[in-house]
Amino acid sequence: MKKITKLLLASALATAFTSTLAADYQTRIIRFGYGLAEDTNQGHAVKAFAEDLAKRTGGKMKVKGFASASLGNDNQMQNALIGGAQEMTVVSTATLVGIEDSFGIYDLPFVFHNEQEADAILDGNFGKKLIAKLDAKGLIGLVYWENGFRNLTNSKHPIAKMEDFQGVKLRVMQNPVYIDMFNGFGANAIPLAFSELFTALESHTVDGQENPVNTIQSSKFYEVQKYLSITKHVYSPWIVLVSKKWWDGLSADEKKALQDSAVVSRDFERKDSRAAGAKALDVLKEKGMQVTVLSSKELDRMQDAARPAIAKFSANGHVELVKELQAELAKIRK
Ligand code: TK8
Image 1 (cartoon, rainbow, N blue to C red):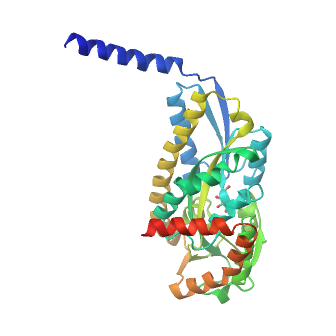
Image 2 (image 1 turned 180 degrees about the vertical axis):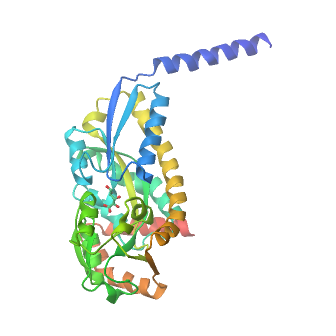
Image 3 (image 1 turned 30 degrees about the vertical axis):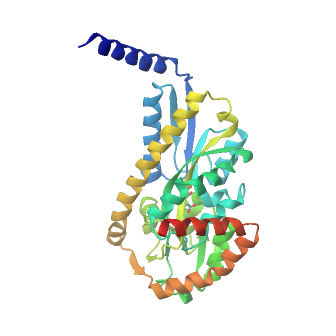
């Protein structure tokens, strides 16, 4: 090897070495709570995040996962983060609207046509601008994961058209757009935390619910729900959140490690969720669910019936935000 190359190599190695050494990581235990069980797309991604962060920080930053809402439901965990009693969580953006109501934009029905559109909006300027609004509320948003396109299940009868919603008590997330939308379809929308959902379905406190097929499978809703309707009415994101109180005490290196691992976990999670989602429908059929695919005519009728819910969201100070999202989507679709 030429002397100069050797020298260059040595100095490059030295820089790499000192920069790892100099990186400012303290020993940190991160309590990361989430709503679904450990063996779900959500649990897998928390684990992927934990592994990547440990690797990145030489084992200094340790994630302790708390599955099945054992630290509280989505809303309770958001408040625990704001208060500084918990470091991290992942929740449905729909459950954030009590803290930052602009997040209701993602709940408007039939906005995204496919996952790629959702990725582009969420990871692009639009999604980042919304995340930035959380700082003032005591939360740091890192990335969006995929919850997925939501479909409908119930224990009463097959839902193939709007009229079939009549008399169905349907659990929805604690979010006004969902409540308005499903009441608009003719159902009796009942807001309830996810952590109470299985029991509510089992005891027939509610007849049905709506969630992505992944969750319908991993939360074993097929045990208490006979009918599945493929509606894909909303693309539902999850958002990975950090307590700002805790975040403000971290070094720049620690913040960067969290951000970088979050991106790794996002890419892992979307792949994993999509692979599981592709198989879930067959699994649910095997488990005995009767599947109805809604016709495009019925989906158009649902879209019409949802217009008042969209109009109400816009009128509540979000006219510009709705326009902005439509403009962004138009660019992507060109
Ligand atoms: C899990 C929830 C869940 C959501 C819901 O905590 O509540 O229906 O879809 O994923 O965030």
